[in-house]
Image 1 (cartoon, rainbow, N blue to C red):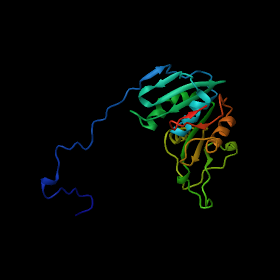
Image 2 (spheres, rainbow, N blue to C red):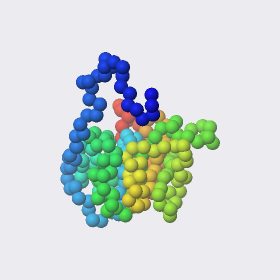
Image 3 (tube, rainbow, N blue to C red):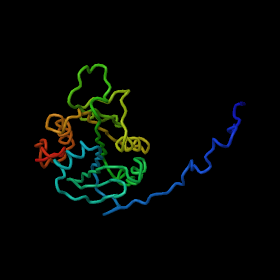
Image 4 (cartoon, one colour):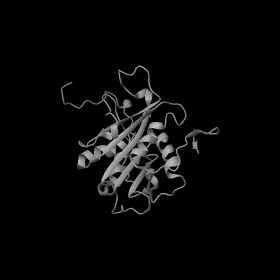
Length: 227
């Protein structure tokens, strides 16, 4: 075999001619519901994802509030929570990747003065050689804002990684030179309660987001929260 030479199998029995190696790309059209245009007075845009984070926000912040805008086939809902603060709730990718969703929300991101993302991971995936016993939960921060103090949270250390929509938003903000703060909550696998969700409630308060309820209890019938 010579370097760079294309070598075919000695028998065509090893070739599946019916196999489509590269399916044709089909572009998805975003199914917007409500306004597609961002308001002109966005002070703060907050992206949240993962079941534990969105569960707390839906029960303690949103309640029965209806979304102002949605992208139905991207799992995106946008809420006007208070005082020019907007919450972007991400539930599932559906027809778009995280990078494509960020591009769909480009005008919203560029219109915001402050951008935050909140996600969560299992505490058992958190890598720190100094932690011999894992706490029930903790919050770490990543930021491209040199003047940001991270609201007092320590920075996430390598080799820990962050994925999902929040990571895509932060990467995009780095690319277009906008400041963004990402918070990742590491939490144990026990059901949601006021002990392991306490750090998230404190973060919500630090972001000046009004809480409709802070009474986080276990539901006897499901893993949802109730007040």
